[in-house]
Image 1 (tube, rainbow, N blue to C red):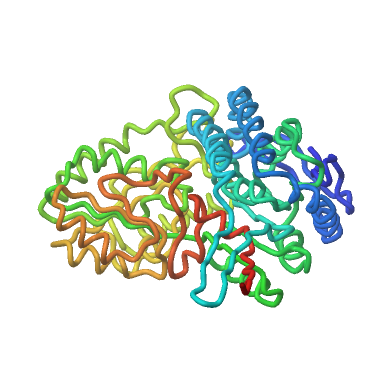
Image 2: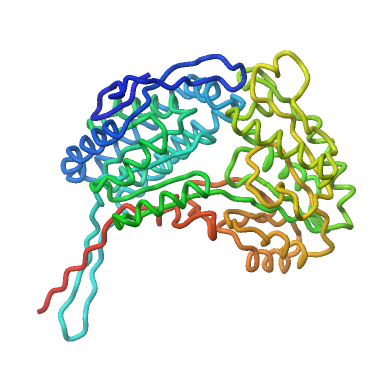
Length: 476
């Protein structure tokens, strides 16, 4: 499959290619161009050339194109989901939900097409002023491999609906769905050059996009260390930046919680997408008085999870996306055993069987009584390992939950409104769930604090990130 620049499918300047591998089978799915700095510059030029005409179209015209694209995506949901599962690894049901999510986000921003405009400001005895909102120009987005379709929608929807053009760099292991979705947008009427996709390594393509003087805004989702590098490069060009970075999201289970619901929330919150979600439950703190009962129920639920190729029926959890993640998770769990930093209740190894030997599978793992020194509690663990810590009360739970450099998401499970209020006030997180975890609707502003990033995506506030506010003063 080729890159898409200026409305055309093109090869990379270097004529080198990267293999896209099915993480469940190890088989080659496709090959994509290994983009260069020249390719990135060519894409920016295409976006720059398309900007003036696209910005001059009405928001309603732009919305019509995005709405048609959403309809085509829904019609092709099944085939798109198969492609997504083959390159990413998630179960087909999750892939279909993500494709639906892509369409939902496009349609949501179509509904906001008439909402971004300036205002009138009377100034006593001096006349009046008014404000004008204008698109920035060429924007760039760099997205990860865990939710490539949904996060693509988060980036392109507010950018395009406000009249900007965009260059997207997908993750190296999951570009195929992004390229196909881009083709659908073109089919729906998106003019050439408005959306361009360049495949290739981040240190080459990504950095070239960030440094390019014609790129006015960068939106990055990914690992914290890389995000800091993005911020450093963008600062020299005074570019607007949104960084949605890593998280080590805590889940707090109080002694008055509905334990059945909390167990179900922990299972989905940790093992959805094989634990490869920014806001997944990565640390679980449970009151001592209900810990034994909760852990017993949680263990039973984990043992019932069916692991396998996401294209097969009745699969709850697929493989990790790539060898690097697979090796990292194996190393972490082995370290827990070697250093006696916790007790592995279930999982902790690659499942047995011939089918599992071909892909990056790792069994859903429950570790209890985890020590504070363990990397399970101090790093962002992007995989199917759930550490559980017993706490005596809410104060201790909040203290331990906040003992991290991250601040993306958190959840508290209780029937007590005062406990819920205290948790919402004191937990350091950009989004907090009450008696639920993980769900993020397109209407909801999303982003973190601390090392989890800066800025917000989604919701109506995201539109302002892609607009320049100009003030005009008039004297009467």
